[in-house]
Image (cartoon, rainbow, N blue to C red; front, side, top):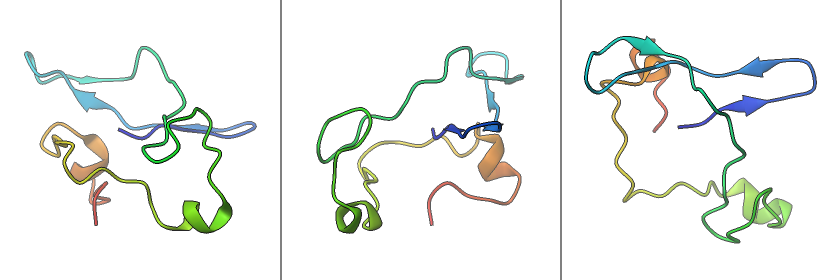
Length: 76
């Protein structure tokens, strides 16, 4: 799940609870750990960052993700 924080704007999408299927906001937002350099924040070069660091083996519950359900899928 991706949560984006910028200077004055915080953008995130709700996700349904696996048990009750009610949309919930994240209770904690953390920076993502880069899957390539394994650091937080990412220390990869700009060229390495252009090639997205998505893990295709990680399961994504698009049925619970409000971003995917709103027509903006997380995975292309």
